[in-house]
Image 1 (spheres, rainbow, N blue to C red):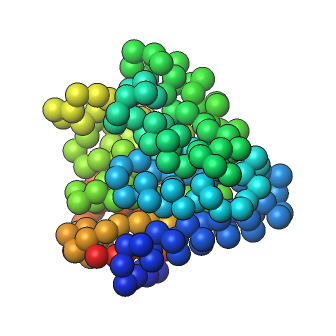
Image 2 (tube, rainbow, N blue to C red):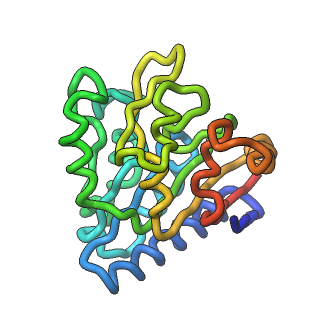
Length: 223
């Protein structure tokens, strides 16, 4: 793991956006298309705002969420809504969005069709992830139903997740898919998450799912 500390969040957001588009540009110079996998949550929003205005051949970029709450795209907690409202704007509006929500009642319904729709955009060229204070990443959440299946070496591309007490189900890219990403970045903010990250190497994979990608990741942190 490479750890990069920034003097403030604004500097991190700007620098990371530049790094991500530079890496995507490198892949696009060698390949016809590139897949950029992005997280939900509150932290990436300012990064998305910057990315949308950066010059890149966005028409050859596929934007794939790392996970999704099982909600319509217009729901306030939908990751698709965040991506469309904050990233797929201005120049980046030309990118192709790859949804993880198919409108069925449950994430397991017609999941094989959804997997095939995602599979054509794999492997991930540039992966950006967040991390929760409980050391989850994507929707591979400690103690959630489906987390063990998502961490398995032979896990399918997508795995349904149910968090105890949560009002909605989720779906997540599995650990093997995340591990196969060519460039991996994790963005976190605040002393609590830094302290949590420092505990991760003393914990099991089930307790700290973020470990699935840490060995190959660059972690970007600002207070």
